[in-house]
Length: 125
Image (cartoon, rainbow, N blue to C red; front, side, top):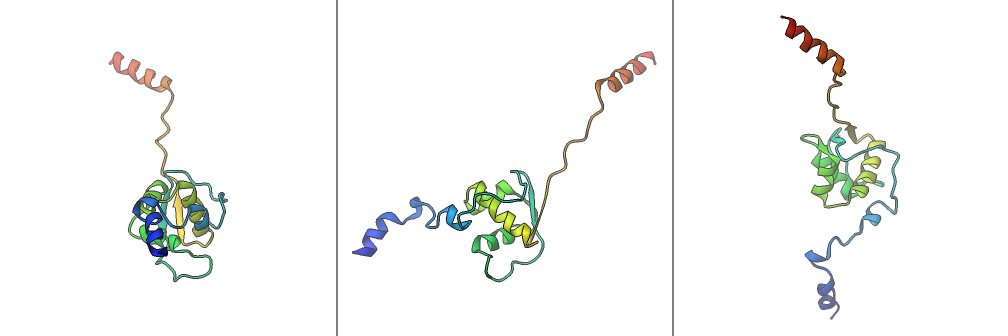
């Protein structure tokens, strides 16, 4: 009877059995300053499960082995909320198991006076 009753509540549509706050052990904030497009790269092979390393941590390291992924991509692959992934990445950063870099910003363009001077110089030719 219990298995039949559980089958009504636990299926693919029910979502994850472990809720995000349980994955982060109730933590909602991290000291790491990360945004959606922060690029995550693993620094080495995933370590064995130890105290403080959850299966989700191992999954993140595995995902970021081949190439850097944006934090939003990591969250999508793991099907976890961004806030949860941000906390997990903060843990991995503290243990130096991942590197996080911000993508390069667009080049700083000169102000309009340089362009006006260039146009005026071309007109004089």
